[in-house]
Each structure stands twice: as C-alpha cells, then as structure tokens.
Image (cartoon, rainbow over all chains, first blue to last red):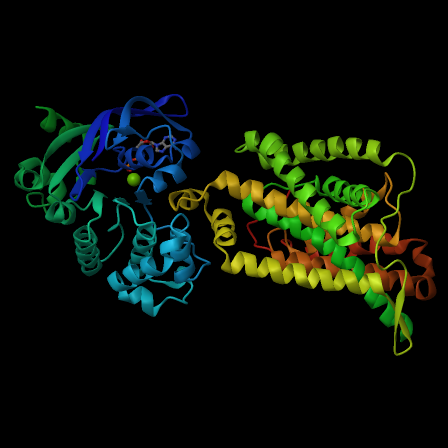
Length: 260
Length: 296
Ligand SMILES: Nc1ncnc2c1ncn2[C@@H]1O[C@H](COP(=O)(O)OP(=O)(O)O)[C@@H](O)[C@H]1O
Ligand SMILES: [Mg+2]
C-alpha cells in the first residue's frame, strides 16, 4: 500500500502548498484524486515521485510510505526502481523521438524486459504499434496521452500515478483513456488517478479524495462521492446551469459547504 | 590544382580536430545547458597525458586510450565538483565558472609541461603519401579517419544505446527524464566525460604536427567559431562547423598571400571569424542550430 500521512509541502521555503494531507492507495485498486486547479494535486504526486527537488519544493512534515518503508528521502530514479511511475500532466512525450524511442526511454530501468514491455504496450495501445516509427511530436493529443501512459508502463510499475490524463481530450477520447486505465488496472497495476473530470474518475475508481487548497476535504468510496450533492453540483455538473463549471464557482462558497 | 588538394586535405585534417572539440562542447551544452569554456584545458591535459604515458613506455594507441580515460575522469570530476552545485544558477555565471576551471587546470598542466617544448611520439610524424602527384600528410588522413569513426560511434551511441537515449531524453526534458528513472546527475557527468575524452583525442592530434607547450590551448579556441557556425546545440553542426573552419583557414593560408596580399599577414587566423560573422548575419542561431537557443 502507498500511504501518505499528514504531508506538508513548501515551495521556495515559504509557499505552503500541502497542509497535512493524508491519503492511501491500496494495492490493486484505482483511487481518484479530484480537485480544482491549484488545489495541490500535482504537488502531492511530485512528493511521491521525488520531483519536488527540481521545483524547489520540500516535504516539511509527514511521510510517504510504500508498504511501510519511507520514500520521501529517495531520488526520483530510486522511486521508479521501487515500482512507482508518474505520468506527468500534459503528456510530455519526447517530441523529437519516435514512438518506439519514447517507449525505450521508459524502459531505462527495465532494459532486460524491453521486449515484453513493448509487447504489452502495443497490445494495450494498438495505435502505437501502427505508429511506432512516427515522430512523437506529430501524434494527435489522444495518441500522445496513450504514448505517455505506455511509456510509464515500460518500467513495469506496481503503482501508476496519472496526472490529468483526460485533460484537453474530446469526450470520445476521454472514454477511451478511461477504458485503458481500467484495462491497465485489470493487469494488476494500482492506479492513483488525478483528475478534474470527476465523472470519468469516479466512474472507475473505488475510492476518491477531493482536495481544496492543500487539504483533503472529502475522503469516501467513489459511490458515495458520486451521490454527494456538492460533488454533483461542482464536479459532475448535474445541478448547475448549462456550461457552468466548478471553475466559475466562488472558491469560498465551495469550501464553506464542505466544511459545514 | 595540387596546391588546392593539399590545402583541402590539411584543412579537413585540422578541421577534424576542431570538430572533435566542438563535439564535446555541443554534447555538454545539449545535455546540461552549460557553455563550457574549459575545453582548451581538457585538450592540453589530454595531450600532456599522452606525452607522459608515452614516456612511461606505453605504445601510442595505449597512451592515447589512457589519456582519453584520464581526461574523461577529469571532465567527470569537474562536473561533479564545480558544476553540479551550480545547477539552476544563471547560464552566464556557470560559463564564468568554466573559465575559472579552465585556468586552474591549465596552471596545473603547465607545471607538468614546464617551459620545454614537448613532442608527442606518434606513428605518423610528417610522413606523406603520394596520391597521384599530390603529397598528403599521413597525419591529416589519420585525423579525418578518426573523426569519421568518432562520429559514427557517437551516432550509434546516441541513437541505439540505452544510455545514449537517456542523454538525449535528459537534454530534451529533465523532469520527464527523471520520471523514466533516468538519473540526471549521471547523464551530466557522462556528457563531461565524453567531452573530456574527445578533447584528449583532439590534443593528441594537435601534438602530431607541432610540439605541445604552454600556448597550445589557444588552438582550442578555434572550436568557438566552429560551434557558432554550426549551431550551439547541433552535433552535426559541430562536425561541419569544425571542418568549415579548418578548410577556410587552409584555403586562405594558401591563396590569400598571392591573390589578396593587401589583407595582410596571417589573415588565415582571422578568416574563420569573418565567415562566422557572415553566417550570423544570415542565420543568427548558426547553420543547424535551434532558433531559441540562448547565447552567452
Ligand atoms: N514550483 C512551484 N513553486 C511555487 N509554487 C508552486 C509551484 N508549483 C505549484 N505551485 C503552487 O502550488 C499550488 C498547487 O499547485 P499544483 O500542485 O500544481 O495544483 P494542481 O495540480 O491541483 O492544479 C498552486 O497554488 C501553485 O501555484
Ligand atoms: Mg496539476
């Protein structure tokens, strides 16, 4: 189990961004982490993956543990070795590389299983097999997201952390990505899914967390969250008028409701 | 015609040396964004190591291999001790630090060299081939062949090997490279090691035509017009830039005294910079460089 306890993260020594976050990701599950822009979701993932350093961030309190062992002092490559791989927000494919070169980079720590890894990824994402020699920068947004996820799988992680995989994709592609996440999870990979698309995330997760300005404000089984009126209003868009998104809703209002 | 061919061969030969230096420069720049002005020191350190290893009785190839290894180690040490703590500092500051490193290494190497002129014992000397009436110095051919081999090996390394791919990935996007499990520090050190080894090879060839002394480092400055012509971030550009500088120098040295004596003595030394200015007028980021590359 991947567990985060009472985590506090500070950027540039002064900006307190996570204020005592606790969250756990049991093996084999899909866990959703929801929250508006700037809530601290990406920061939480960075704290797990060892990426705070290069952002001038630091864990000032709390722990990140994998099966009881502390991770928060390890460098990013060591964490990949422990079986946790993050797929960054915005896909970040190596645009000049071919599809297959991208996948080979993903296997950096797993060179011996390169062949098996490629086979698994091409099986999950047949479109990547068709495009294996294509320059990654010329792929469509959906294909690039698949490539980023496939590349993340090349290290054969036990835990896959996905940061907003549906961002900027058309509904049809969002459904496709959703099904792929389920398929990946079905192969035994635990998934921590960070999303703003709550419909998609809560549709496949067993458990969900909602973050607000550096704190977890809701922590419940996905079914409970789906039924929650606040989540419905602000994340699932079921009660608000057409086109109204959580982004338009005044922040203090949401916070008041959740805390009350 | 004979003069032209001889000038071309000499130019390509010397140009190969500049290209080796420029390659090291570009490899470091691409993977770490550091503009490395310590390349001259790495070159003379490598040449000095060849001299000492040769005197210790090693045959020439072994001495060169040993010197390349030592220079690689030196590059790696410089990166780890002087540059690594500076990650994130402005490019300009880091460039100044490399100048400091250059001076420190050269002071130490000068002590080893002393004030004597030192020769590198090598298989070619000033021997020539007679190719249809044109005398071609063997050492120039050796330089050209060596460059070709180095470029081929580097190409294969960057294209097909796991580590080479990791170096390129880090050059493109450090954070993403980290999430693939690539240790960015190791790739930094490795680029410096490669640059050191290439500089030692360049130094060896410089020492085949002339003796190595305390002024030899100046030759390495010719890599600067080479990389600026080729583009700071282009490996292919470094090779072509180096060869262009060598050939221009040789052609100007051969013909200018006859056809344009009014340009004065030693105009060939300035000529690469004239071409450099012309290139910059047309393509400010070099022939093969990327437009957004920062210049210092
Ligand atoms: N490198 C950084 N330095 C300073 N502040 C940062 C940095 N990265 C993110 N932040 C701030 O931390 C907060 C949380 O950001 P982030 O974790 O990216 O949120 P999310 O992923 O939920 O949108 C935001 O207010 C953001 O401005
Ligand atoms: Mg984010």
